[in-house]
Amino acid sequence: MTSESTLIIRLCGPNDWQDLRAIRLEALSDTPEAYGSTYEESVRWSDAQWKNAASTRLYYLADRDSRVVGMVSGGFNDGKPGTRWLYGMYVTPSERGRGTAALLVQSIAEWAKSQGVGEIYLHVGSSVPRARAFYEKVGFRPTGENFQFDRDPSLTLITMVQQLD
Ligand SMILES: CC(C)(COP(=O)(O)OP(=O)(O)OC[C@H]1O[C@@H](n2cnc3c(N)ncnc32)[C@H](O)[C@@H]1OP(=O)(O)O)[C@@H](O)C(=O)NCCC(=O)NCCS
Image (cartoon, rainbow, N blue to C red; front, side):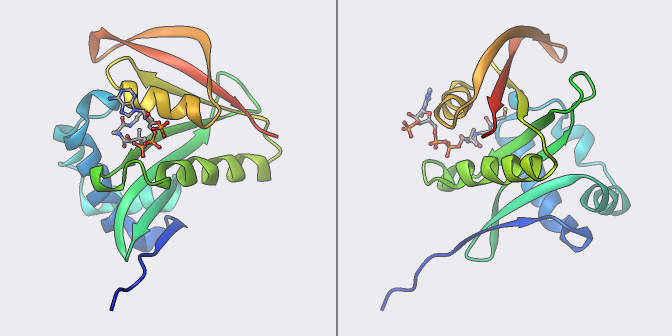
């Protein structure tokens, strides 16, 4: 007998801080060059800091068969009022190529649209071509604005934008 696999995308709440910590530390350890923070600084966070992040910042978590396998975060874009950022995107290696990442992006798009927002921006590093290809596939386009990654000046951060319907 085979049991069906289930995938759930859920909004992270105050009680989900341990799941958030687990998947965020995994992301920072798996692909350190993709993120602004480092594993070394994040692993030193106290439980209170994780609880605070889970309560006050916007995250969506992906669960495959009750195990957290992915995350994404969203936030206000002070540089471009009326738009939003997407960041912190990650899915665990066994979950890649299964459509989970697209559902996480969709969650951020729905959150933005519910606030009347028409554009989502992100930065993607030149060192993660799969992420860049993924974002293009789900409708992001380069804006032409590129930056040096302050933590590693050999890497370029590419700005991309998605227009929401
Ligand atoms: C970025 C990420 C969330 C994308 O999710 P994913 O499930 O891997 O994405 P998908 O497989 O749907 O799409 C990736 C696309 O890149 C292409 N691709 C695969 N490997 C690639 C590679 N090594 N180089 C370039 N493109 C690649 C594939 O063709 C695929 O498109 P397809 O559906 O037409 O085959 C996931 O790969 C991830 O978590 N990576 C590590 C963390 C990371 O880089 N985060 C981004 C922070 S900005």
